[in-house]
Image (cartoon, rainbow, N blue to C red; front, side):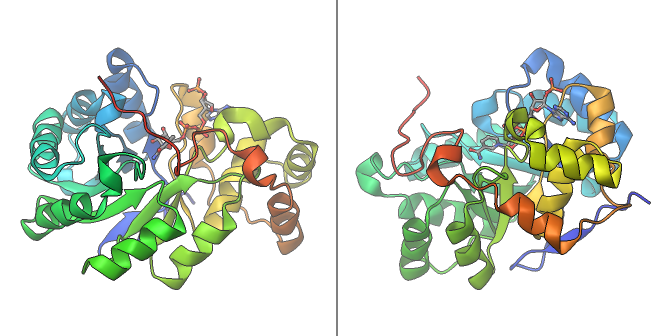
Length: 282
Ligand SMILES: NC(=O)c1ccc[n+]([C@@H]2O[C@H](COP(=O)([O-])OP(=O)(O)OC[C@H]3O[C@@H](n4cnc5c(N)ncnc54)[C@H](OP(=O)(O)O)[C@@H]3O)[C@@H](O)[C@H]2O)c1
């Protein structure tokens, strides 16, 4: 059976634990990829203003004939729009690009602590407005480190429902995940297969061979059993199906531990470090 479980967020809303990511899918290829993913059974799509493909995500969902309520849609605030006035305009633009009157989840994409005088707090308070007026059913953050989460907790009234961070076998990001667990912030694991880097690891290929699954399925199943939310990206329909076939097998605790032991700490990070990242689109 391929029933995707849901996770209940700290605001009571439910999110499918497995979704489909569209980072680095060209706008011209996005509607086709999302349509194929919906056909496979995915009901959760993760996009962002900075991916440049919100419009095509919306088109594919509308043309699927599915009820809007049956597809969970996440988007994220551009790094160039952290000031409250800009954030309000950017959120309006996100809804208009998607062609929807709400998103299920809206995130601050990066904390950018070295920009905007280190003020991601007023950005978060602006997301609270979108949540209060119902246009963002849930609000969360992405790439927040523990100190950033602690500051939101001290200075604002809403706990993010998720923190979307880089997590895979080479960067298990345990401290940030564990802070999330303690504070009811669900972890969304981005680049869950490290864009393919972990798939040839002998520990993973040996487990895959023994359990009769592919390396990608083993790694994605490992994330799910840890309780994290994942949305692997693929433009390849056979891989979309492969990545969806995760609910008819289970990894034992020894295999779970062996995969977690592959952690390389900072050497395993594939993306920028959240404390330093300061990219702003021109
Ligand atoms: N918040 C953030 O800052 C942030 C950063 C990065 C990513 N994300 C989100 O996380 C999602 C997933 O991360 P990601 O796209 O970076 O990487 P990923 O899902 O770990 O890996 C995607 C890559 O792996 C390949 N692939 C997918 N399934 C495969 C399989 N079964 N076997 C072999 N190769 C496979 C894909 O190739 P093909 O497409 O050619 O099939 C693609 O090159 C993104 O799409 C985005 O939604 C968020």
